[in-house]
Image 1: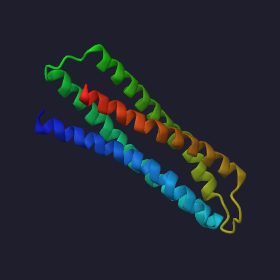
Image 2: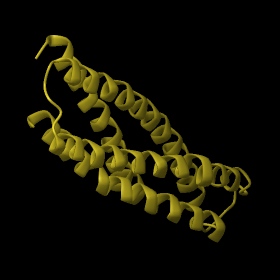
Image 3: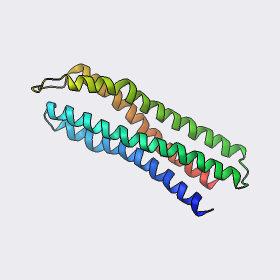
Image 4: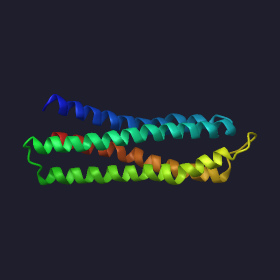
Length: 164
């Protein structure tokens, strides 16, 4: 294993940790914290946190794609035979990564614009979470929770690929 390959694997793992860490932070810290705030502050805090998570996620997804392709090329050119079980695990990992990316795209391109618009349209004196905004946040959070569940599975499949 070359230093370049090891560095590429490290960047790949760090990118996945960045994405999953952002998801877990949002679920464990931001979500519960805003429940303790006044609705007008909580709504704006959630929206700003969502924007930050989306930025971090896109950076991580880009790094994962780049380093994943480079890892696969390095592995295939190293003379290691990519047997059937390796390809099955790789296929499952890529499918789950694709599902996670699709969920993220739904969050960003379907729910986020509406969340952003509803947040910007709110009066400064809002006393409760408006139901349309809450409904979009629930769907957004559902996709986030699904990705939080799929992420560790993808990591374990990746570890199986490195070992196998």
